[in-house]
Image: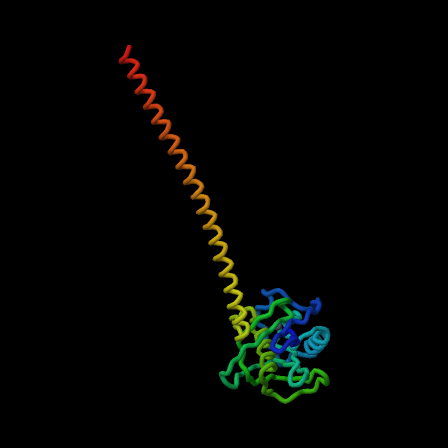
Length: 239
Ligand SMILES: [Zn+2]
């Protein structure tokens, strides 16, 4: 999960950082679910690589599959900035309370999505490492709010789900802004239609005027021709 830095009272902005070359950004690969790490399989390489790359990016979490390892493991910065690595984790939701979390993702540069997340979760894993000492930490961990959002984001990665696969939600403030933007857009569209109609009406009025003139000319021509015929008839009678 991409790290955000609050720049206003409630506004969150993406921290622009150059993309790390090891980060997978291909949605097809990212949507593949990860495999469990087998009991007899060593996790040292994954732990080392997650730790290494996480130190070089601006993020709160990084799943193994985001660095090209399709295994169920991720690293996350939680509980007052401590870093943990989870091997074969599973998550459960402590209750149904949900809220809106605004998130970015290292694998989706430039995209910010407001989505619904559970506020309280319990995460357990076959192994949870303290990333600094690589000592094992007791499982499970109970997490709330931002910490809970981070692990839900990373668990999504392990299941091949991205923030763009979630329904976009809006906070009250975002909803207000969105409605205002829509109103402006609608008003602009209506003005455009009114302008088009006006110019079409103007064209019709002009055309009507021309038709009237043409009709008057035709009437005069008919009258003149009738007069000529009458005169010709009278001259013939006088002959
Ligand atoms: Zn992500």
